Image (cartoon, rainbow over all chains, first blue to last red):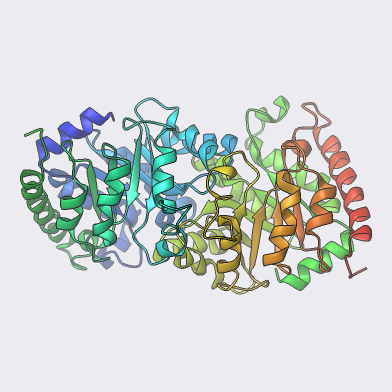
Length: 275
Length: 275
């Protein structure tokens, strides 16, 4: 999916919601465990319920890998089921030397037809650029994550006036463009979105950490939104597990709808120019 | 596998060779393509041929993932085939927020019975510690990699007297111990092994970059070996693809044997105390 198609999708749905498919077989409603592929059945119901409110789906690869071959089969079926007008993100945090990153890119872009993959920056340019060689596909590079461990290295000062996450943004933004790179910036550090926007004013940011992790949607939008929206905000657990009963999909739709309404309001307030 | 079992294995084989199973279906001998599972048939032959000379095998996950479900099935069969007296490393470069890293740990330690997984440090402590909670299992953390992109961030100075890779070593060494953590340090930067050993004198180091990438085994041993050996040196392409013909396994054995002899010599010269 191209950047302009993504922006159109945000305009049409008045939403920049990504539903994170962190599907945990230990948490899904018990009645689904009797089906042949409970993870896929759950995802299917969640996708049907949230599709009117979401512009993106983000399967979290760890949850599928933890189930072995059966998990990869659930992922394959899920990817085949997601409507083609929605942006898809393989949340896989990959990254290795060049010939290996090329293989990861083929895995996600060719085998599973994802639009994008999350990539870790530690190994530098040649670990990231192989993901940028596929037309219409994206690398979503970790910059500032939403977890406590983000403070261990990402906030360290490099030289006199730059932190590691800022250097990652600055240096990597020359490897691709706003047409094929996005950045992960956690919602739990809302006030730092101004610092991020000083370095990458135009790139889309994938924002985890709203919902279960406690980040503020309003702060993210105040400091992070640009004229193209420039944000994809993810919610996983707060949507997926809002009910453990037969009504799980209905409750997921309610949660997604609530977020979509808030997002529509944010688009009006914070400068989205494609109304 | 425990640390003392690994050291015994190095003593018994007089080798610290890891064979990297970067099995590329486009590079394996053509006659194998007629078999039902060419990747597994290739690995099986390589394992049979190199087992006398190797203390570890390291499947590179990207190569299996790029083949979709069939690749994961080849990996499963490969893991079932590797003899239990050999250390196994899932070269997967994983790492995410805590609940997600736990899922990756379950994937590799429980579904595939790997002894260890390579992990990226960018997301900090809570992305790494879930890999340390499985008895007898290891996290192999990226410190200083063998690729050109290692210069982009890993060598940056943090504060006055420490580079990022040194801080990663120092800080992370408190998360686990020499019994459940190793570090990736690339052979292409042989002279930096002294800097690494100042911070982590006792930990095992997994060393890629000898062979196709051009690192010097002698430099690695001179600056990196400790009294327990403390090194696992990986070779992938130079062993796997030394012949494209029917004799590929024989040639792989020759390459592995040559490396084992060099390693036996290094163990005598550079202070291995378990003779």
